[in-house]
Length: 221
Image (cartoon, rainbow, N blue to C red; front, side):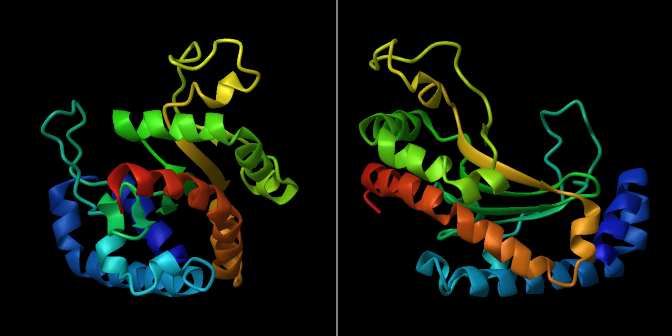
Protein backbone atom coordinates (compact mmCIF):
# COMPACT_ATOMS: atom_id res chain seq x y z
CA UNK A 1 0.00 0.00 0.00
CA UNK A 2 2.97 2.29 0.56
CA UNK A 3 3.66 2.49 -3.18
CA UNK A 4 0.01 3.30 -3.88
CA UNK A 5 0.00 6.07 -1.27
CA UNK A 6 3.15 7.51 -2.84
CA UNK A 7 1.52 7.50 -6.27
CA UNK A 8 -1.63 9.16 -4.93
CA UNK A 9 0.45 11.84 -3.24
CA UNK A 10 2.14 12.59 -6.56
CA UNK A 11 -1.22 12.59 -8.35
CA UNK A 12 -2.58 15.09 -5.84
CA UNK A 13 0.26 17.46 -6.74
CA UNK A 14 -0.12 16.84 -10.50
CA UNK A 15 -3.83 16.33 -11.02
CA UNK A 16 -3.98 16.79 -14.77
CA UNK A 17 -4.49 14.56 -17.79
CA UNK A 18 -0.99 14.99 -19.24
CA UNK A 19 0.74 13.82 -16.05
CA UNK A 20 -1.75 10.98 -15.58
CA UNK A 21 -1.57 9.69 -19.15
CA UNK A 22 2.23 9.75 -19.17
CA UNK A 23 2.09 7.39 -16.15
CA UNK A 24 -0.92 5.33 -17.20
CA UNK A 25 0.98 2.03 -16.99
CA UNK A 26 2.01 2.78 -13.41
CA UNK A 27 -1.59 3.59 -12.50
CA UNK A 28 -2.89 0.37 -14.05
CA UNK A 29 -0.25 -1.68 -12.24
CA UNK A 30 -1.12 -0.12 -8.88
CA UNK A 31 -4.86 -0.39 -9.45
CA UNK A 32 -4.45 -4.11 -10.14
CA UNK A 33 -2.42 -4.44 -6.93
CA UNK A 34 -5.19 -2.67 -5.02
CA UNK A 35 -7.79 -4.92 -6.65
CA UNK A 36 -5.87 -8.02 -5.57
CA UNK A 37 -5.75 -6.74 -1.99
CA UNK A 38 -9.50 -6.05 -2.05
CA UNK A 39 -10.14 -9.57 -3.37
CA UNK A 40 -8.09 -10.92 -0.48
CA UNK A 41 -10.03 -8.72 1.93
CA UNK A 42 -13.36 -9.93 0.54
CA UNK A 43 -12.24 -13.51 1.07
CA UNK A 44 -11.35 -12.81 4.69
CA UNK A 45 -14.54 -10.90 5.42
CA UNK A 46 -16.56 -13.76 3.92
CA UNK A 47 -15.36 -15.91 6.81
CA UNK A 48 -17.62 -13.96 9.19
CA UNK A 49 -20.06 -12.34 6.74
CA UNK A 50 -21.24 -14.85 4.16
CA UNK A 51 -23.01 -12.11 2.19
CA UNK A 52 -19.68 -11.30 0.56
CA UNK A 53 -18.99 -14.85 -0.58
CA UNK A 54 -18.35 -14.88 -4.31
CA UNK A 55 -18.07 -11.10 -4.65
CA UNK A 56 -15.29 -9.74 -6.86
CA UNK A 57 -13.29 -6.61 -6.09
CA UNK A 58 -13.79 -5.36 -9.64
CA UNK A 59 -17.50 -4.95 -8.88
CA UNK A 60 -16.79 -3.08 -5.65
CA UNK A 61 -14.07 -0.61 -6.67
CA UNK A 62 -14.74 2.99 -7.65
CA UNK A 63 -13.31 4.69 -10.71
CA UNK A 64 -10.50 7.18 -10.27
CA UNK A 65 -12.10 9.56 -12.79
CA UNK A 66 -14.12 12.38 -11.25
CA UNK A 67 -17.49 13.51 -12.60
CA UNK A 68 -16.80 17.23 -13.03
CA UNK A 69 -19.98 18.16 -14.94
CA UNK A 70 -21.69 19.90 -12.03
CA UNK A 71 -18.67 20.68 -9.85
CA UNK A 72 -16.67 23.91 -9.67
CA UNK A 73 -13.63 21.70 -9.03
CA UNK A 74 -12.52 20.55 -12.48
CA UNK A 75 -9.57 18.39 -11.42
CA UNK A 76 -10.07 15.19 -13.43
CA UNK A 77 -8.95 12.53 -10.94
CA UNK A 78 -9.72 11.46 -7.40
CA UNK A 79 -6.87 11.50 -4.91
CA UNK A 80 -7.80 8.11 -3.50
CA UNK A 81 -8.42 4.45 -4.26
CA UNK A 82 -11.60 3.09 -2.71
CA UNK A 83 -13.95 0.13 -2.69
CA UNK A 84 -17.34 -0.70 -1.17
CA UNK A 85 -17.16 -4.34 -0.18
CA UNK A 86 -20.79 -5.34 -0.11
CA UNK A 87 -23.29 -7.74 -1.62
CA UNK A 88 -24.28 -6.07 -4.87
CA UNK A 89 -21.03 -4.13 -5.18
CA UNK A 90 -20.29 -0.44 -5.14
CA UNK A 91 -23.85 0.64 -6.06
CA UNK A 92 -25.53 -1.44 -3.38
CA UNK A 93 -28.02 0.14 -0.97
CA UNK A 94 -26.94 -2.33 1.71
CA UNK A 95 -24.74 -1.64 4.71
CA UNK A 96 -21.24 -2.81 3.84
CA UNK A 97 -17.53 -2.29 4.34
CA UNK A 98 -15.95 0.81 2.83
CA UNK A 99 -12.17 0.95 2.30
CA UNK A 100 -10.68 4.34 1.43
CA UNK A 101 -6.95 4.78 0.78
CA UNK A 102 -5.81 8.42 0.54
CA UNK A 103 -2.60 10.10 1.76
CA UNK A 104 -3.39 11.62 5.15
CA UNK A 105 -7.09 10.71 4.95
CA UNK A 106 -7.41 6.92 4.83
CA UNK A 107 -10.38 5.36 6.58
CA UNK A 108 -12.53 2.29 7.08
CA UNK A 109 -16.28 2.61 7.41
CA UNK A 110 -19.45 0.61 7.88
CA UNK A 111 -23.16 1.31 7.66
CA UNK A 112 -25.53 3.06 5.24
CA UNK A 113 -24.50 6.40 3.72
CA UNK A 114 -27.07 8.80 2.21
CA UNK A 115 -30.04 6.40 2.15
CA UNK A 116 -33.00 7.44 0.05
CA UNK A 117 -35.99 8.81 2.02
CA UNK A 118 -38.01 5.59 2.28
CA UNK A 119 -35.01 3.65 3.57
CA UNK A 120 -33.96 6.40 5.98
CA UNK A 121 -37.48 6.50 7.41
CA UNK A 122 -37.43 2.72 7.86
CA UNK A 123 -33.98 2.77 9.48
CA UNK A 124 -35.14 5.36 12.00
CA UNK A 125 -38.19 3.24 12.74
CA UNK A 126 -36.02 0.18 13.37
CA UNK A 127 -33.74 2.15 15.68
CA UNK A 128 -36.84 3.41 17.51
CA UNK A 129 -38.44 -0.04 17.75
CA UNK A 130 -35.25 -1.82 18.79
CA UNK A 131 -33.35 0.91 20.60
CA UNK A 132 -31.88 -1.35 23.25
CA UNK A 133 -30.53 -3.78 20.66
CA UNK A 134 -29.05 -0.96 18.59
CA UNK A 135 -27.45 0.71 21.61
CA UNK A 136 -25.99 -2.57 22.75
CA UNK A 137 -24.15 -2.75 19.42
CA UNK A 138 -22.83 0.81 19.26
CA UNK A 139 -22.01 1.01 22.97
CA UNK A 140 -20.07 -2.24 23.02
CA UNK A 141 -16.61 -1.53 24.46
CA UNK A 142 -14.66 -2.95 21.52
CA UNK A 143 -16.97 -1.25 19.03
CA UNK A 144 -16.57 2.15 20.68
CA UNK A 145 -12.78 1.79 20.77
CA UNK A 146 -12.69 1.38 16.98
CA UNK A 147 -15.75 3.46 16.05
CA UNK A 148 -16.19 6.13 18.78
CA UNK A 149 -19.30 7.73 17.28
CA UNK A 150 -21.65 7.73 14.33
CA UNK A 151 -20.83 10.31 11.68
CA UNK A 152 -22.66 12.18 8.95
CA UNK A 153 -25.38 14.82 8.80
CA UNK A 154 -28.11 15.24 11.40
CA UNK A 155 -31.45 17.01 11.72
CA UNK A 156 -31.84 19.69 14.38
CA UNK A 157 -34.97 18.12 15.88
CA UNK A 158 -36.41 14.63 16.22
CA UNK A 159 -38.38 14.00 13.00
CA UNK A 160 -42.05 13.08 12.85
CA UNK A 161 -43.74 10.78 13.68
CA UNK A 162 -41.40 10.06 16.60
CA UNK A 163 -42.03 11.68 19.99
CA UNK A 164 -39.90 14.77 20.57
CA UNK A 165 -39.13 13.68 24.11
CA UNK A 166 -37.81 10.24 23.08
CA UNK A 167 -34.79 9.67 25.41
CA UNK A 168 -32.53 8.58 22.54
CA UNK A 169 -33.76 11.15 20.07
CA UNK A 170 -30.22 11.85 18.84
CA UNK A 171 -30.26 8.43 17.20
CA UNK A 172 -33.33 9.41 15.18
CA UNK A 173 -31.96 12.75 13.95
CA UNK A 174 -29.40 11.03 11.78
CA UNK A 175 -29.44 11.36 7.99
CA UNK A 176 -26.82 8.60 7.73
CA UNK A 177 -26.17 5.52 9.82
CA UNK A 178 -22.41 5.34 9.42
CA UNK A 179 -19.36 4.75 11.62
CA UNK A 180 -15.76 5.51 10.64
CA UNK A 181 -12.28 4.67 11.87
CA UNK A 182 -9.46 6.85 10.52
CA UNK A 183 -6.02 5.48 9.69
CA UNK A 184 -2.67 7.26 9.44
CA UNK A 185 -0.44 6.46 6.49
CA UNK A 186 1.86 4.64 8.93
CA UNK A 187 -0.94 2.15 9.61
CA UNK A 188 -0.17 0.53 6.25
CA UNK A 189 3.53 0.16 7.12
CA UNK A 190 2.55 -2.54 9.58
CA UNK A 191 3.04 -5.97 7.97
CA UNK A 192 -0.16 -7.04 9.74
CA UNK A 193 -2.30 -4.19 8.38
CA UNK A 194 -4.60 -6.57 6.53
CA UNK A 195 -5.32 -8.54 9.72
CA UNK A 196 -6.04 -5.29 11.55
CA UNK A 197 -8.44 -4.16 8.81
CA UNK A 198 -10.23 -7.51 8.96
CA UNK A 199 -10.56 -7.15 12.75
CA UNK A 200 -12.02 -3.64 12.41
CA UNK A 201 -14.50 -4.80 9.78
CA UNK A 202 -15.46 -7.81 11.92
CA UNK A 203 -16.23 -5.35 14.73
CA UNK A 204 -18.64 -3.40 12.51
CA UNK A 205 -20.43 -6.50 11.20
CA UNK A 206 -23.20 -6.53 13.88
CA UNK A 207 -23.93 -2.87 13.05
CA UNK A 208 -24.24 -3.73 9.36
CA UNK A 209 -26.38 -6.78 10.12
CA UNK A 210 -28.84 -4.69 12.17
CA UNK A 211 -29.20 -2.14 9.36
CA UNK A 212 -29.47 -4.75 6.62
CA UNK A 213 -32.45 -6.40 8.28
CA UNK A 214 -34.31 -3.17 7.50
CA UNK A 215 -32.80 -2.89 4.00
CA UNK A 216 -34.10 -6.40 3.28
CA UNK A 217 -37.59 -5.45 4.42
CA UNK A 218 -37.72 -2.21 2.43
CA UNK A 219 -36.43 -3.65 -0.84
CA UNK A 220 -37.70 -7.22 -0.39
CA UNK A 221 -34.18 -8.58 -0.83
